[in-house]
Image (cartoon, rainbow, N blue to C red; front, side, top):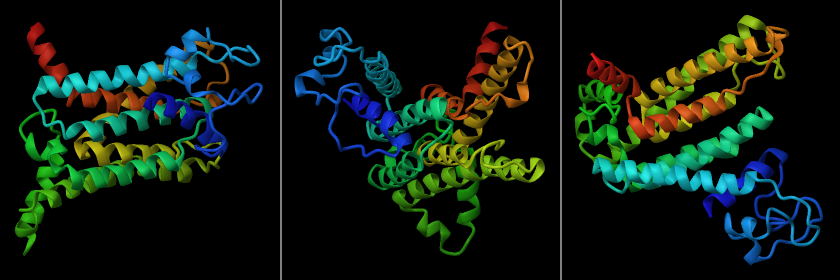
Length: 294
C-alpha cells in the first residue's frame, strides 16, 4: 500500500500535480480506477498489465515499485528483529526507506529531488526523535559500529562542560533531538560545501550545476534519521559508487562528450544510506571481512 502511494508521489510530484486529486486514473484514457482494480500487485496481474477500459498497457513500474517497497521493508524488519533492537526504530527506518526510494526514482528520471520529500522527511525525523527517543541508535549503541555515535559522543562531551549542559543532556529526548539536529547539520554542511564550491569554481548556472542543493538536502534528511556518522559513510559510499558508475559510463560511451553527461547523485546517496541501515559502519564490516579472510 505504501509502495502504491509512492508510485503516485514519483509520478505526480515532479510534475507539480496534486497527490490527492484527481483520484487514481488511467494515464491514457483517464478512466477512474475502481477500488478492486487498485490492489497493489494483484490487480495489475489480474488485469494482465492493461487498463480495464482502454486496454492499453499499464507500466510494469507500478507493481515493481510496490514490490520493491515490500522487499525493502522486510529487509529492514528482519535486520531490526535479528539485532534485538527496540521496535521503535521501525517507524523512522520505514519512513526513510520510502522517502529514499521516491527521491532516487525522481532524481534518476528528472535530475530533481523535490523539497517536499526532504523537508517533510527532516520534520518527520525530528518528530520521531521526540516520540521514540530509544530509536536513536547513537544513544544506546555507543560502542556498536551500527550505532554510529562517534561524532555525537564528541559533541556531547563538549556540551557537558558548558554550565547547565550536563543537566540538559540528562533528558533522553533532548539527547535524541541533539542527535537528529547534529546529523541534519552534518549532511547539509558536507554536501553544501561542494555545492557552493562548484558554483564559485566553475561559474555554473542552474542547468550545469556540479552538485545541486537537492543532494545536500537529501543527505541532511539522511543525517536527521541516522545521525552524523551515517552522513559521512553515506557520502563516502555514494561517492565511490558514483565514481565507478561515471567512469564506466564514460568508457562505454567511447569517451565522447563525457563532460556533458549528467549523473544524478540521489540514487547513490539512497543506496548508501540503505546500506548503512542494513550493515551500519560498512567500512568497519569490510575491515572485519578482510581480517577473517586473512
